[in-house]
Length: 92
Image (cartoon, rainbow, N blue to C red; front, side):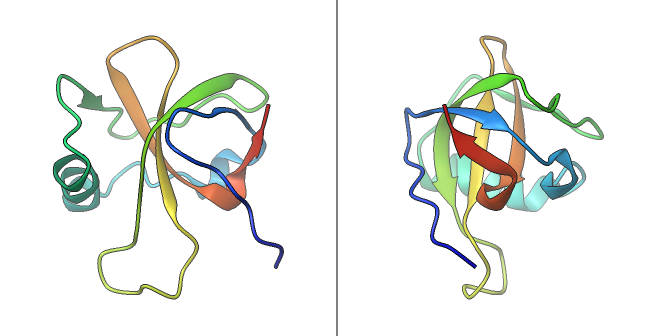
């Protein structure tokens, strides 16, 4: 697997919304807390739209396995945010 260099503040395009963590409330809360992100709501049960552009609010790791690729917290100018593995994204 190739390394993907995505950082907070980057514009990204969703290429595989199957990498979304749409039901992991505890993972969402962990990444929000660790990165001091405020005023956002988890898009619980939803997926971002493929080929749409989003902004990375934060990058975090899985709850139990640090060997997995990082997870990005992304949004597109609304207060709902998505958790998605960075392998489901590409830089715009």
